[in-house]
Length: 121
Image 1 (cartoon, rainbow, N blue to C red):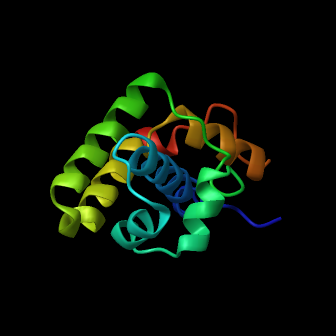
Image 2: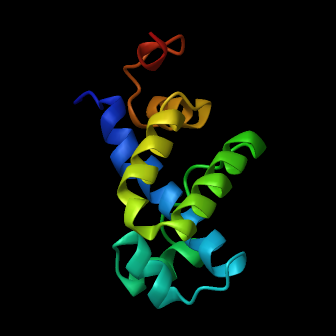
């Protein structure tokens, strides 16, 4: 059995979940269409469609506090779409220590101790 690195969980689960939430916020809160949301996030319109229909990036559920940070990031991106990569990077960095990430990591790699604290040191 191969070990799964926390960074792989971030790429496979966290970033898609962030894109899902940002896409939903852009469309519902800011009235953007799918094409414009895709353009801002630098992904395809088809990806946006999958995010908003919860067919992609649906494994992580964010806490209320985490959602406030995501909404603030969405506001900042709307103000300056050129900063999207920087803003999403900083958001993902801040969410690396999310317990949701730990839960997915434990479910994907059974060799990890339930007392794992790799991301917290």
